[in-house]
Length: 104
Image (cartoon, rainbow, N blue to C red; front, side):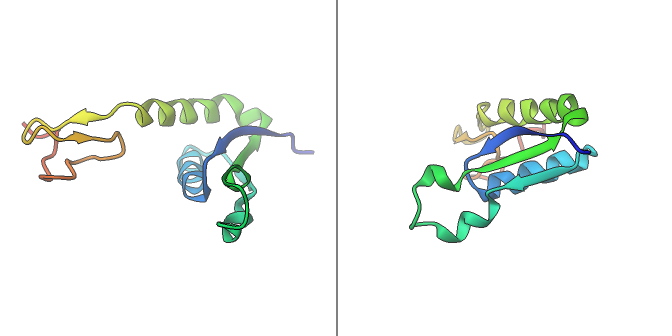
């Protein structure tokens, strides 16, 4: 019998599916709980649209590391060295001038 645990509560279905993909890329099997409620957007309170990611108990450590990396990236924005624009952590290149911060 599988032992599923609550791993993370995503704000919306897009975040849940992005995390599901990252977890599956690491070999973690994921179930989503609440994913079908997205169609009720506007009819339900926003907190009801959150999606819970469930993983097997034996994958808890591996899955936790994936979530930890995700959360660290969320708070680490960066300034473009070319135009000085502030970019969110989810941007790999500057949204304004398209400069790649990894280029010399």
